[in-house]
Image (cartoon, rainbow, N blue to C red):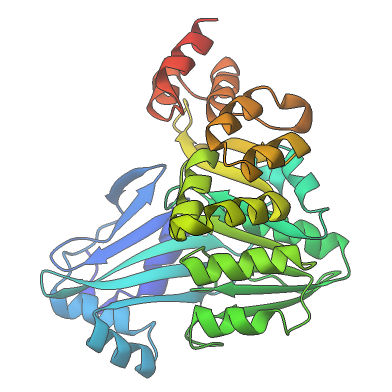
Length: 359
């Protein structure tokens, strides 16, 4: 068994990377753990139970003195670091039961294409827009950032333009291809999201990636940029197109709803809701997507505030590349990629999915 003093976080992450784990967990009074295909289990190998001193030493290795000072005041910290030429890590450092802990999200350095990710080809069409707002939504850990990276990479390969990303922390690194890419990390390249957002439209961007729609300020800047000739990508922690619209509208005061719906109908180009669903063979997960494309009909529904009609529009909108979450799940079941039981666990509307599977 290894001595705890010889264990380093880069080594643990590298093992997780080779095991195709999505996360590595380190805390006191436990062996190092990983999440592999949605299941949390020990890292392979003989590992000692780490003490509080071991975990603190291991975690401090990836922190700068400034980050350590901030963490000691706030007891929370998000940061990112690279492990050689293998992967990047988005890490959350926290206190639990009075000791240091860290969760490392593993991000491959290679940006996969939409085809490699198994995503619908209609998403590539979204990158051809020259202005507007495109939202990728879903719960934490559903691959939103990976999908956005694939979309940004398509633009990077095909358009001679300026791409600006504002992220906390920086995850995928985009090298200049046909486009010129500026990536700003909160806490390193800018003090906070708000000043970075205020400044972004003065940086002559064509495409803007905002890591997350956090508040009214972020939403306002995103819509304004989308209305004034920029293509804006961002994420929201919602599980469907309807929930996304509802969340955005409820960010603002009630008396602004009518004007907000008008702005959204003009700016919004698409909402892509995503879930990662375990495969039937146990070898990883597949992305199931609900896709809303803002056709003139959909834009009119949004302008009128008729968000409940959006589901029907997606259900009938295959010609435009739209689909509901249930339609995506049914395709995977019919192809033998996921089981019916798994599909039901991730259903958009369970009663409807039962009927679709019976057919």
